[in-house]
Amino acid sequence: MQRDAILGAIEDSPQRRWLLLVPVAPVLALVTAVWLPFVNTADLWLGMPRLLVWCSAWVLLLLPALAAVEFGLVRPHEERRDDRQLEEATL
Amino acid sequence: MTNSALWITLAGMIGLAVIAVGGRRKRAQNLSEWTVGKRNFGVVTSFFLQAGESFTTFTFLGVAGIAFTAGIGATYAIPYIPLGYVALYFIGPRIWKLSKDRGYITQADFFADRYRSPLLGRLVALCGIIFLLPYLQLQITGLGLIVRLVTGSASSGTLSMIVATVLVVGFVLWAGIHGLARTAYVKDVLILLAVVVLSIVIPLHFAGGIGDVFGQIAQTHSEMLTVNPGDYDKVWWTTSLLISAIGCGFLTTPHLWPPLLAAKNGRVIRSNNTFLPMYQVVMILPIMLGFVGILALNPNTSSNAVLLTLAGGALPNWALGLIAIAAASAAMLPAGAICIGISTLASHNLVKIESERTKLRFNHLVVIAAATTALVLGLTRPDLLANLLLLTFGGLSQLAPGLALALPEKPLLAKQSVFAGLVVGMLTVIVMTVFELNLANIDAGICGLVLNLAVIAVVEAVVRATRPRTPTSASSEDLPAATPILETT
Image (cartoon, rainbow over all chains, first blue to last red; front, side, top):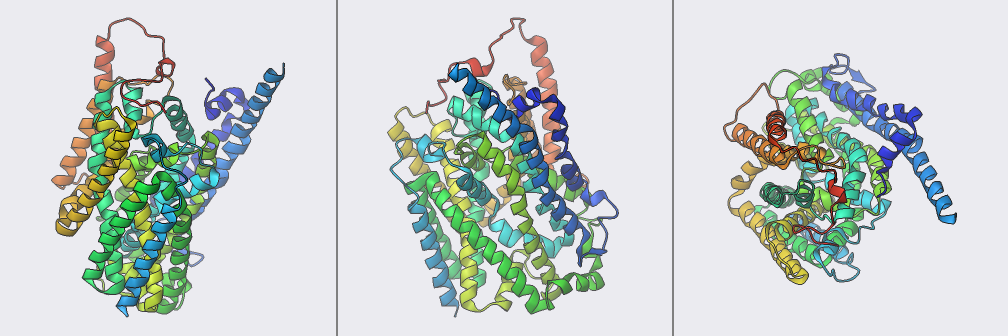
């Protein structure tokens, strides 16, 4: 039975495992947003409430964070796995 | 004038149903095909199907209302679904793979099979049905409220609820998940257009533009720009965010399963959950409209009516009808998904039916019964289900530990531990909600989860201590695919 691609990628590329930590930054920034004194304040950033800007910005940053895992760790593993399977099939 | 808005809305609702009906390619031969298709949906269809679940009547009525009442506290609605997508990026492909290999079509299948416990499966199915019914009613009554606010007529609201229910039942029975997939494209375009138009027109009309709104708020209501001590404090914000994110990320509401299981492969699920968080930034728009409401409306205005009251003051009647179509689509698509969720749990997990044809027929009867019950109770006893709705998310979130710990090749828990934790967690949520117990503004669902995990730890320790020492090397994935509780697909 074929292994899950993410788990396979973690085992296959130990030197790139650090990429899994990239999404942790936006997750922590979002969960702790109201506890940060410079975010939970009545002052505005770009004419908008700071909490609104903070949450929107970090939600947008989730995309590059997950893309880093996908394209830096998982997809290369899938490509190597597919190449191996092709080789085995041709042998 | 109100009639024109009503007719435009009704025509739009019928148009949506026609589009959904057109989604059927051929008649479904069995329940699996009707619920998850052939598990071959590509990136685009899966994206809109998953996104469609996240824009509901809450987007239209609830978020602006919370901003009007709680100010910037409403921002918890921006990140909770995106955080759920992060979890789904990692666990979604695993759930999909297990489901494809073992033939799951419902959440209850997963629990029954992973823990080798049909009883646990039935408990999960029963909880899913009980807690989803008020959510179905919320969509139908929300739609009625939208039409009532747009037309100013209570009878129009009632008429639209009845028409919407009939249409939803019709397209769900005819086209199943394919109907939802077809409507999802149209719905998302309509909602995005409506929210963007409202976010330009309303601030311009009431406050001279969006740039001025927060400047005025900072001068006159600066306390609304921070999360302050009180009912909507930091603990409320954080725990509401966490419990909602857990609910989304661990698929605790059963109607979220078919869109995920219908995907073609794990890569589709990972791709979608990478890009979907970006989509949720649109939530800032109804929040901004809630702030316009603080400046422009009477403080006693009903929170649910804020957005459409503002729209009524800024838009002509025909344009309101178009906005109402978008809002109606935000109710009809999730209502359809919920009908599929409830009916498959009932016909596949609660009642044992051998014949595929009979099972599909019984499933269709459940769709009609669930939608009718939600409509009738929504019209006659709205409080009955509304009270139950308070339990829906916190209650169903109690499934998260059992789900997460069943993902490894061999589940990490015994069925007794999951069962006990689930019961204690749900009872905690029910008791805290019914008796209005407030523990420092911590969400009842989080309190339930803490006790749930504590009970799991204790029962698991007891089970392991008393378990006979006969090691079993086979993981559950090595067991034969056909089990008494599952159909093979």
